Length: 64
Image (cartoon, rainbow, N blue to C red; front, top):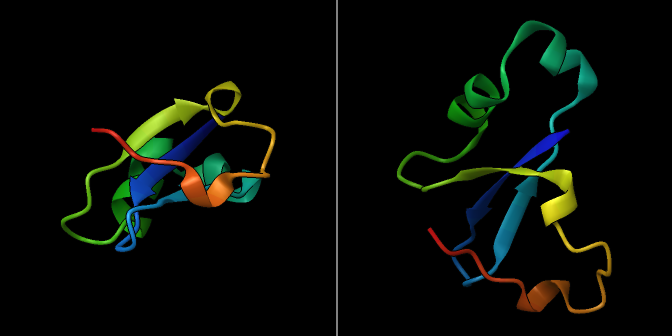
């Protein structure tokens, strides 16, 4: 499964987790184009690339 990540205005990272129902009618790229704010660079990443330990989630960084 893939997620979309993009930077927030505070230097952190937003993680967009697509709903299974949305993936039935759209690609992950279409979901990202629809939901990521205009002007924000995003990446599509495998769920295994997202740390499972959320202890330091406010320290996660986005790198283009």
